Image (cartoon, rainbow, N blue to C red; front, side, top):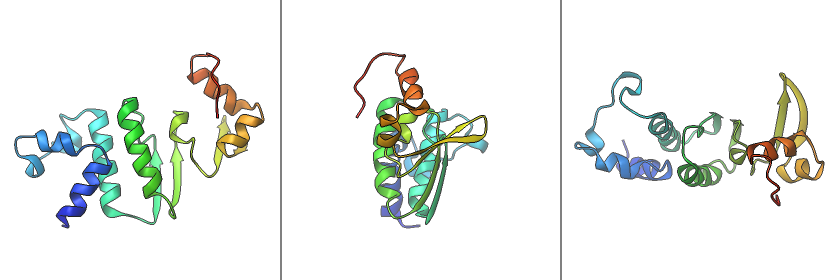
Amino acid sequence: MDFNRFLEALKNANILEWVESLPLKYESLIGAGGQGLSQGQKQRILIARLFYNNPDFVFLDEATNSLDANREYVVMNNLHEFCKNKTTVIIAHRLSTIKNADQIILLDNGEISEVGTHDELIKKNSAYLKLIKKQLNNLQYEIY
């Protein structure tokens, strides 16, 4: 194992500080199935494994849905950089997770209803925009 790559993966997944707070730090054992961990900790450990393994194809299914907004922001910025020049598929209900995608495919009852970038879909006054407004509790925000 490349220890420096390991530390970088933990840092990028925004979980290094937590691992270093454990009594055995990097030698700590985690229970079967992540027993004793929060959902957010489990997600960040899985994301750290992704960073460490550095695959060419990345599939993320609700990968940050259990993270608070601050942790999600850090992790998503790091994932955005990491996924450049990789084939990446992100499945998410939290629209902030997909805002920077090259292409967004919106499904409605299992059927493709819209395809485009964030900006293209916003300009269409589309169902995508309605979802964003709903997630913002129907408050009027300027969306760029």
